[in-house]
Image 1 (cartoon, one colour):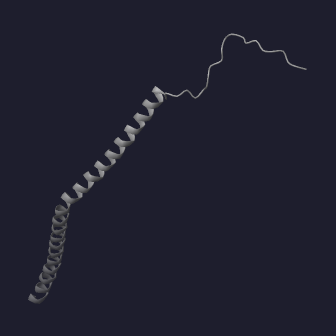
Image 2 (cartoon, rainbow, N blue to C red):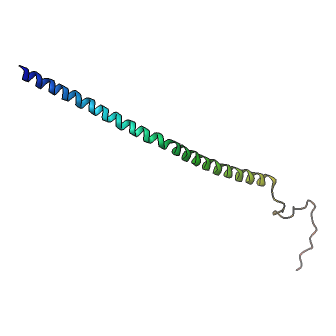
Image 3 (tube, helix red, strand yellow):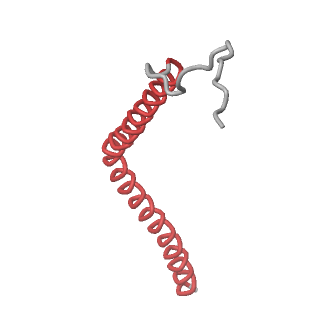
Length: 98
């Protein structure tokens, strides 16, 4: 009777040991992954802020250029490109020569 009982206890111990061992391996792997990511976060944060800063600078430059173009269009140029305005008084023309 002792042999089957020992065999069953050994099998139960192996199953429990495998379950606990795999859980421990997953916990260790998760902890090491967490530590690796934790160390890389400050660098990634700096990189993200530098990208955001670059986009903000480009948007500000484009905004200033648009503002300047709108201001220039509103003020107009100093030169008259349309030419002289037509006069209101009728002009006397010479009769045609035949």
